[in-house]
Length: 319
Ligand code: SF4
Image (cartoon, rainbow, N blue to C red; front, side, top):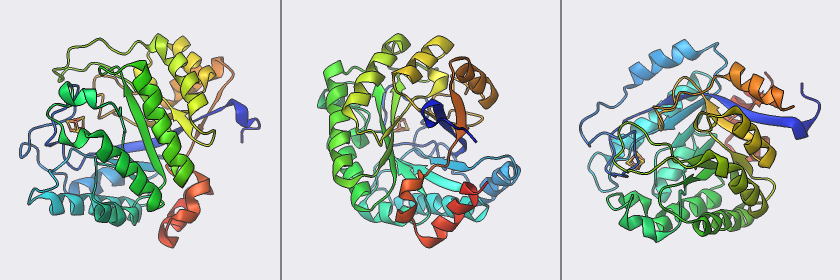
């Protein structure tokens, strides 16, 4: 076991399951979506077969990541039920589900709380300016709707992950405003586990024609975010989007302490393969840091979970 907590960087051994790639939003930087009706939904049978192969592989988190079915679509209820059933299946097979499927109604969120140890939604950016650009055809990206999700998660006592997408047309002042809003909500509900700082990284499918967010700028953003966010919120960066080892270490020095879910594929950025655990361990070691696995729920939130979920988490805490 590590002896010095100040030198620890965490990651979550994870696998991503995608109920569907179809999404009614059309964010222009998206490298994930297909048109509604054009991708079959993942069946429980197919998921069971994938999960069976993961048993004994030390995968703890099943990240359920989905494109969105319109809230008023007749398919919405079936979509939500499929997500619920996939979470329930993952739990029954010994994994810990974490769902991130876009804005939900209060009732939908309440339902998924029963089968998730934590949930997430990127706030991305609060500025309404993006509604005229990258989010012009993305009704789910209304900043107030997303902020309300964070508030509901707090009211429902759901341990929550959120974050910013950097380099999609916002200004530095927008970053600080978005971070301040997260900070305020956390001070009210104490429910945010992590804030992800995700640099825009162009992929093969997107129509948004902009350069990648400069990774050299990231340490500076992390350092300022560290000042704005309360100390009990961990800052997470996706290591596959910070290609240069030196800059990855600079991000850690600046205050990032988590590398998120590491699995076979980054579904959101499929053009950027994950650096695998051993390689990450070596990079971090060269800077005097130790890479340690974590569960998708931080221990301080265990008491918010149902007895059934607490039992599932306990099995991983004792490994
Ligand atoms: S980024 Fe998310 S919400 Fe936007 S189109 Fe892609 S899948 Fe849909």
